[in-house]
Image (cartoon, rainbow, N blue to C red; front, side, top):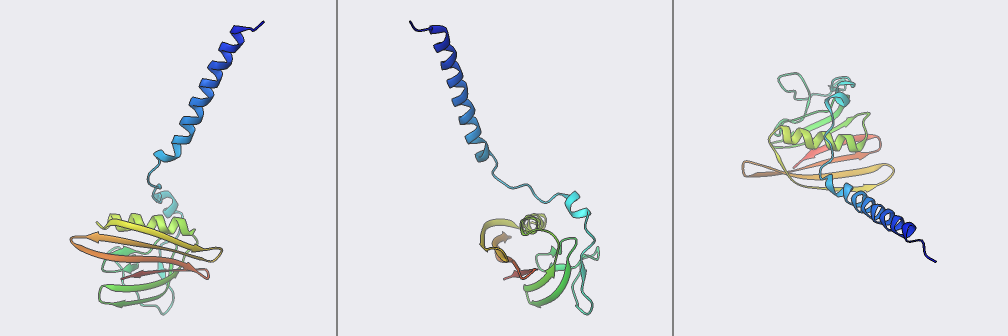
Length: 160
């Protein structure tokens, strides 16, 4: 003899379990953009600076710029080791204690703050020591490519 009350309870539990699985499976798809680097993450680090003997261009607030054209301020905690400019193109190599992911998020947020629209961002990595993201941006009909690279313990930003 079948106990129909237990079968009904089991069906309800199975339906609830299925609903939970569906909702849990959809939750990651709802998050479209990664959170930007918070100001709190940035304020715990010392201001960016140039290494002794390195000539850098700084903004009005005295923050060294990784690119004066964009303009792209160096992240807090950075020490600029090398910097070169050729018109609108630039190259900067610097040290920073933050993770590659934090630097990537900072760079994208800084580009957006400067009025650039991110068209595409593609990442490439060869762990443990080589990571790169190429970001294409546009502003006022002009497009630029910004490359953030981490290699041998240092970061570099190239603007083309």
